[in-house]
Image (cartoon, rainbow, N blue to C red):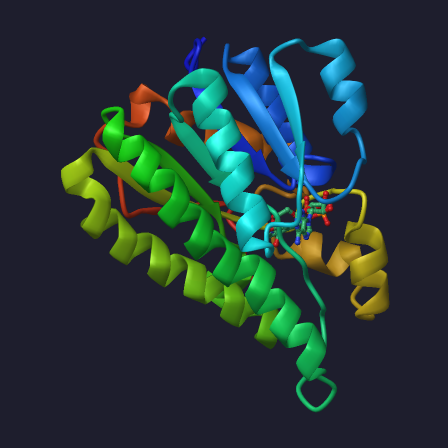
Length: 245
Ligand code: NAD
């Protein structure tokens, strides 16, 4: 159990990758606060695992985010890990990009991550440090036609990860990013069908010959959140089956 009794926060925990991260962290012994604006699987996970605590709020609502983080601090006395996973994606080709969608992606994928990092790092600094894991994307590392605005949000997260890792290191707070490839979540088929891409073509560009499972990403997050990664900070860990987009 690499996260035994660690207090971990996972945003976007109601479904997909966030749900898998929350479940893996519970299996590894953590007390997990799952945050989401939607119900999804949150109540079901809470009824099965006493160590899972659902927190319902929109990560772009700064006051609600602050109240939620203070609740965790009050209940547990500390926060050991934060996984900034909540994200939105609109796949649009250049010429079809819609400003409102781009703004929403930046608010959820970037600004909320910066604000949660500020809130949580203050709490971590007072209790001896912690680990922050930001979910980026392979699209930011390799580029992806039809995803340029979304990739820009994830590129921003990689830059934020590297700089905040340097800034927070003196407080013993490590900051890393995980860059998933294409992961088989609830929404992936719908997204790739809408973009006109064939999944078989995409799989053909993955050296390990398969799409990612949410658990592949979850295991990487639990590792980076744990003390096993105590000398790792400012890194971007690709979890993409060795992909070339
Ligand atoms: P998903 O859409 O299945 O789940 C995202 C979750 O975030 C949902 O439960 C949603 O309700 C929540 N969320 C969205 N906006 C929110 C907000 N404003 N406040 C609170 N909660 C909010 O997505 P997923 O595929 O599981 O992706 C999770 C993360 O991984 C995202 O950051 C995504 O960009 C990234 N990612 C996914 C893939 C993939 O192939 N699925 C690949 C690379 C990166």
